[in-house]
Image (cartoon, rainbow, N blue to C red; front, side):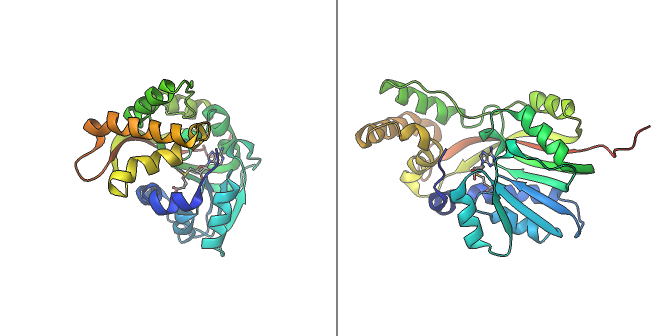
Length: 253
Ligand SMILES: C[S@@+](CC[C@H](N)C(=O)[O-])C[C@H]1O[C@@H](n2cnc3c(N)ncnc32)[C@H](O)[C@@H]1O
């Protein structure tokens, strides 16, 4: 999917803002090396930089990486797909906020991350859990299909049980895996839901004419008014999964 880095920073900065809660799980160790997967425009990578000796932000979107480099020229960023990681035991922490639900194959992803981490090192991540944006997605599907298109969800929102099983399968020892509701107010009053849909359903909207897009977005708004509009702002039905896990110490008994 193509990311609009300007729209992301202007209207959806709350993603990185909420992600700050994850930073408290980063070990206090100023010599550690941290890999930030799906760094986006780099706001959290910049925070991580003050908690380690070296941080690298990677992201599969060239546009996001260019924006990150422009904003934080002293930090290293690279265009890289998380499923193509080829590191062998190089990182003390792999960090990731709001990314894993964009990646269909969590088994392969966790295998790559496991190999990237040194012994006794940590994976710290948060992303959409089962049920995330269910109300919004359902309204979008109905409006999209009414125009004659078939919707295939690109999101991967696992349950705690399913993600924990994959962590174990890939050799991780679990410190915590939890899911929780995070009702999320969207910026820009009445326009908030449409901004959100234009960013996160960009691929589907691109298939439609301008007129069809307007019709779909109006329809979606009217379906969701009773459920997600509180009189002042739209509140998205986010659910998050947070996981902290570590690799074993590598000692053969
Ligand atoms: C919602 S943004 C989160 C950005 C940042 N972590 C933050 O908290 O603001 C999701 C990011 O994941 C990136 N992404 C999606 N799939 C990816 C993949 N397979 N490998 C690397 N990055 C990916 C996208 O390009 C996008 O920048």
